[in-house]
Image 1 (cartoon, rainbow, N blue to C red):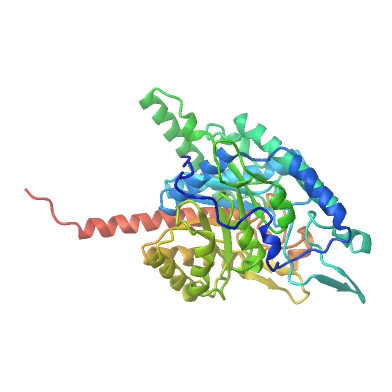
Image 2 (image 1 turned 180 degrees about the horizontal axis):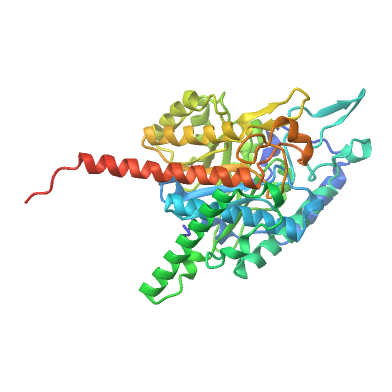
Length: 478
């Protein structure tokens, strides 16, 4: 449900798509040839937009609904996309797993699910160190295909502005294919049979989970059929799935090149490179370049916060990014870690509620739960991921708030990057299929297991509330 910009709101004072250049910047990339960088930016600026302003406005309206507890956001995809995987099978698999997870959540939450993919632009990753040393050789870190290449050579690790142009081209190809699939009915709830992942082999979904999933598919299909019979209408608007794109806005050169004004929306600037860009935990300094850029765009904006974030810091950040306090403006993505949720989250939620800001709260249970094995391999434990999600739901419910969404790094591939869960991946198994370029991702079975668990938790929570309301309700008068 699209919400048009309010004509009373003036353009953001003192802001332009390049005003961020006057602010200190974190995760800065040094290009050896500034002229080549400017040429690449000029080329991208002349290209057509990747998304439209009306799609962005529609998402703003849906996020406002999610913040109010009437919808739920499922955001997921690769840790970092790579150009070499701009392939129809890879893209289709990403859609399939998000569709399957969203169907399970639709059944469990009894709410519309907003599907947001970390794709068609998630080509950059922040790094804890700007350089990497191997065998006494120090080179720039790999910052994702948007910036440089993964091979450990001076030529590969040199930041190349032509990669910004290539990122735009790969994003356009990916979006074109996704739109063709969605418009062709691939994502229609009438046809969940299209979403089967038949290549999963012996690590595929367990028999119990498959039965549960098929039951949910049948339930949703029967409900749609019943509504169509009762209303004598095809439920196209209900069953036709929308997909939105998101990525971390790390390279402000790339983001500002795709920031445009559009007809009939005077004074507003849109990032037309994706629907929902976000600011990372490492770049959210309230007086920094990233916050300066993001404060001026009309897109809904995500901001990630970690366990060291204080209520005062968060409110100061929200006052900049959500100055108009308009629902749909902002998504706060908490990545606190399973052991810190109950300690940190209540104070943040309470402070925001008292401030008048109404962001949509999401949980990113991945980044706060990254650990290293004895061999130095990064991994995440499924139990910790699920624990952070369940504790976040508990905290929000206890405060009369609503967890509006979940943010995952995942893949439909048969990888062994996260340990635990029903798939039985252990530390000794990690080298079997550890394929990520950066952070460990949930595999298909682990992701579906979490979706089932959250759906069951939400169902049980609603039942508990219903029982409480029934027990406490006054008796009806005779």
